Every structure is written in structure tokens, then in C-alpha cells.
Amino acid sequence: MNRWIWSSGKVIVAMSIVGSSVVAGKLVVQSFPIFLANELRFLVAAIILIPLWIKIEGFSTLNRKELVAIFLQALLGVFLFNLLMLHGLSKTTAMEAGIITGTLPVCTAFLSYFILKEKLTRNMGISILLAVVGAILMNIANHSTTNHYSTSLLGNLFILGAVFCESLFIIIGKLISYRMSALTVSTMVSLFGVILFFPFAVAESRYFEFKEISAAEWGLVLYFGIVVTVIAFLLMQQGLAVISASWAGVLTSLLPISSMILSSILLDEKITNLQVCGFFLIIAAIYLLSKQKGIEN
Image 1 (cartoon, rainbow, N blue to C red):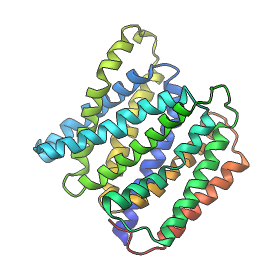
Image 2 (cartoon, one colour):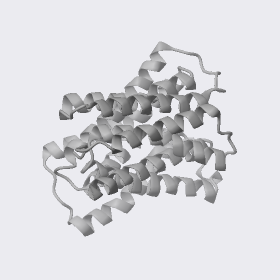
Image 3 (cartoon, rainbow, N blue to C red):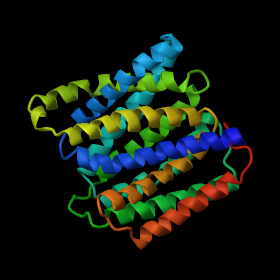
């Protein structure tokens, strides 16, 4: 049980860090183009992780199936997620995007049932429902003042595709956690991230004025590379080695909570009643599911 608690805690911290990236991302995209920012983020992570990986694990060799699995994880959860979310937000309202992204726990549980054969108990079902409603309330509150995007079915499908990709990222992470260390997976995902974003980043960098970037703005890039990518990836992968993918999916609903708190502190955004309601629903979901036995692996 202690092992499960520690692993759940690692995923919670990872989700909190990812939530902080929403706030940091609002600041980064004011200075860097999207693809260039992601390229720099994964480049920083790879520079840190590769020497660490070689020192600790001695440049462990991976077979073809393992490389393909990690590449798919990077392609789906890193590259396509960002690409689909970016294009989706350009074609639909932020409110609708928030509602769709709130379905991540359901999507993850659904795929876990069919791919990983994880059991869906009554407590799990109620917890997922509470987490989804809570996440949707928080996202609606976050984006209720953003109405300047033109609504589009295509845009909503892009957002849904991003959610599907993120769920598969968790599922694949669970599958490979039995065979590969968190350090190996995090290193290779970062390396594949560098490769996938590279051609787009090069195109954007041709017209980008790097000399105009301040030290604080470079600091945000380092935060994305070191904290959001290295630390969050390691914690998430370590947690997936113990807890079920369905439980990890429920814990993803914590993301908007950390985003809400940091937005209030750093961006002076107001916390609404809807966000408070969503917060308590998510906490209730996590408490209910934590009482269930046998949700490791």
C-alpha cells in the first residue's frame, strides 16, 4: 500500500507540474513560436537526460519493439497532442475545448479496459464521472470569457484527437513500464521530441530574433525543459510502473487545479465558484477511488 501511495504521489506531483506549464506556456508563447518553444524544451531535456542515462544505465540497448513503443509514445503524447490541440484551439472555442479535454479520465479508462484489460468497478466508474464533471467545470470557468474563436466541428474533432493521443500516451507508458526504466523512457521520449519538432522549429527560427529574448524568457524555456519535461516525465513513468492506467487517468484531472492556483497567484486571475465546485468534485473522486483496494497495476 505504501508503494501505491508513493507512486500515486509521484503522478500527482507530475500532474501539478504539467498544470504549472499552462501558466508558464501563456508567458512563453508571447516570446517564442509554438514549435520552436517545444524544440528548445526537448533539447534542454535531452541534454540533461542523455549523459545521466549513460552514466546510470550505461547506454542500455533497446530492441526494435521497445524503440517503436517509445517513438509512438513521443509521437502521440508529445508531437500530435500539441499539433492537434494547437489547430483545434484555432478552430473552436476555448470553452468547448475545455469541456472535451475534461473527458481525458473517461477516455483513458475506456482504453485501459480494452487494451490493458483493467477492471472497471463501481467505485472507479463513479470516480471517473466525478473527475470528468469537475474537470469540465474548471475548464468552463477558465475559458468562460474567451469567445472570439469561431466554433467548428473540425476544431472539436482536433481537440478530441488530442485527448485520445494523451490517453494512448498513458496507456503505452503503462505497457512499457514493465520492461524499461523511467529514465530510459524519459530520455528516449525527449530525444524523439527533438527529432519530431526539429523541421518545424527550423522553419520558425529563420525569422525569429533570438537576440531580443530576455534572461527571464530563457528561464521559462529552461523551466519547461528541466521541470516540466525531465522531472514530470520521470515521476509520471515511475508512477505508472505501480498504479493502474485508469487511476492515472483520474489523477490527470488534477491538472486544472494547479493551473487555477498558479494563474490566481502569478497572473492575478480570479477563482470562480465553478472552479471551486470542480475542485471539490475532483478531490471527492480521488478520495473515493483511493478507498478501493487492488488498484495497483
